[in-house]
Length: 286
Ligand SMILES: C[S@@+](CC[C@H](N)C(=O)[O-])C[C@H]1O[C@@H](n2cnc3c(N)ncnc32)[C@H](O)[C@@H]1O
Image (cartoon, rainbow, N blue to C red; front, side):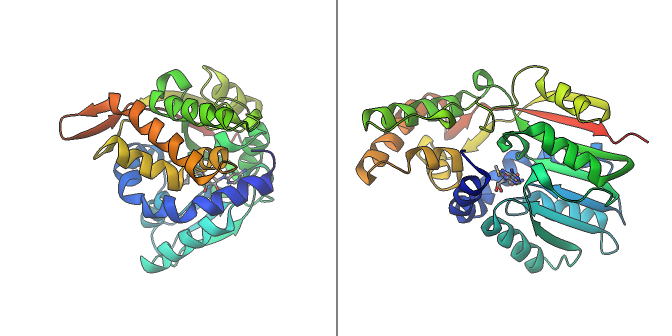
């Protein structure tokens, strides 16, 4: 992503797709999300910051845990996706949720004294993750806990690696510049925080204590490779942005090529894409 404004625009474009595919995303992340909320010790009455909240799937889980006397502030760079989070919270009757459009790298919430903070699959999109982590730490009260999920490295996320390789190949075939954002482990890209030890180091450098990072297998289930690609083409903002400059027929060729390669993960009756996530927990010092 070349700038925060580009990133916001491309997530605005993916907002409806991400929200629509919550039927796939929720079962994919449900178990690890509950572990993340347990590790942040989210309990009734707490004030919780949800960073890069997206369409609010995990925001609603947090809101149910804190209950009517707690508060959840859901923040995101994309106004479009955050509007869906607000609508989903309202539809679920969770008045304890409010939203704030803001870049994780400059939350502007220093001294806000949140009891806990969560960030599910958002930190890796920050081209300055240390700034994001520092900004989150400053928003916490002393001893406030933080837990987050990011993607592991490309070699542990072969379906995403395959999808990016196909998108890059078709960009080159179309004569488009590949650009810095074409590689999924560049700064600010999908798997940028997957390098062993990096997330731990950043959390320590941001001033957190009691830092722990663990890897978690997170296979993605869909009815077929085509179903998974259908999810990617409407909700995977970095891939959508990579293919966006191509003509419709060239984009279609890329998605079809991707589908062919991803058939290697077919299982009887469906499709199972291996993924590895990293889950971290850390504490704001006294
Ligand atoms: C993969 S989605 C995850 C959304 C949600 N947390 C979930 O797990 O369903 C990534 C989200 O990160 C947001 N994002 C990307 N860069 C950001 C930044 N610099 N600051 C805040 N949010 C950002 C996007 O707008 C998008 O909503």
